[in-house]
Length: 120
Image (tube, rainbow, N blue to C red):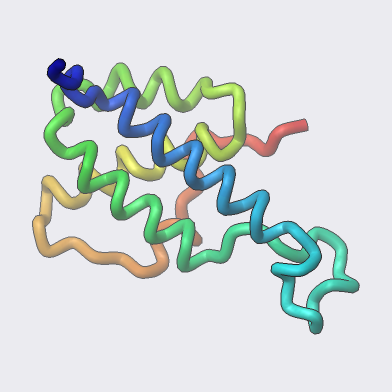
């Protein structure tokens, strides 16, 4: 039995599931640094982890460059905040990598303010 070829959507879904699971795991009280446990909204994904997800997903998406516009439209409308953020940021990062293969920006996810809006 042969596996179906990967699509941009399947790659994205795998990354999104992993990101959401990581965020939920890091929000558990036992995984929050004791110093921060008393703070509201403590826990969750760290900046460096989000940046890593964006870069890794961008690299995986490069072969789907001809689909970026349709993927951007789809992901900017995703029902979850993480989907809107991860999808749009990764596509932009992939575009930056295509334009300059040496592109590297450790602050990209901090500066990214594409189409995402927080969930209500």
